[in-house]
Length: 334
Image 1 (cartoon, rainbow, N blue to C red):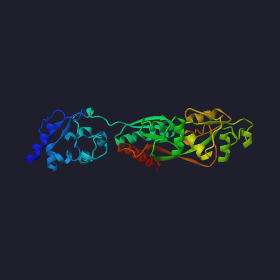
Image 2: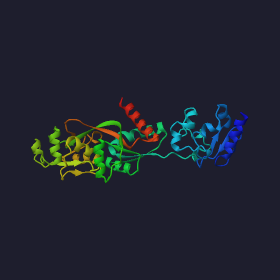
Image 3: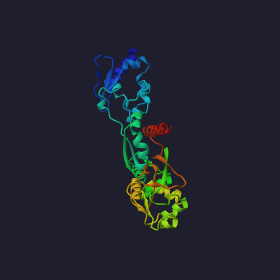
């Protein structure tokens, strides 16, 4: 035991940063690579049967220092597996004399579809951050932009509300030149796309074939469908949106939208434009349709995923965020 304690003391002296004893003389302090002093209790480790090499030779060979990444702080492995099941991200004080000086792990960046943001990320965000100890940096725009920024390395997760194929098409509309290899979709929940018309419009039931003819311009007047003698005004989400791509893929059989179709900047605007236009029609997520302002068309259900996309397998930190969102979605669906 004496030799072991001498070894521990020598180790502490060799580590980067100034070393010394705590006031009670029972713990050794060493520099935390600029991340705050770390408390190392040599006697406690010795009493558990650990020698220096237990951690430093096997786990941290570089310069014989315990070079722990910020991912290590949160993944429950290495040193932290032994410390009462606690992870440093939850309890900095257990290791760092000055928790504020400990470097924070970078946030998980989530960019993309407004539908996923409003239905999943926004309502569950606080619970996910609390459960994981990981902060989230979120940019709500559209699926195409989110996918493009994922490919550019500007985010860790892209939010999408359509198939991977439709989401990639949206990304190309947003300017993506080359799709990354090994894109993976992580389903969190499902939602529904609905078609809406003005409340005064007598046409409240349409087949997918009729909706296709409306959106491609083959049918140009409501009179052809039993409505008023007025030209149909088609409103769609932005060209880079997954909702627009999903409607094109599923309902329109990948036929092109009519040139006269009016793309809006944000999906909620489809509801607002149709509410103000007696001749209007448009598709949007059910969560964005206000039944006090518009009428929902009766037609076959158009279901869609609310999901995240990663390039390859997610890192452990990102996977924890995905799992936490899934758990929240499942719990609230009961």
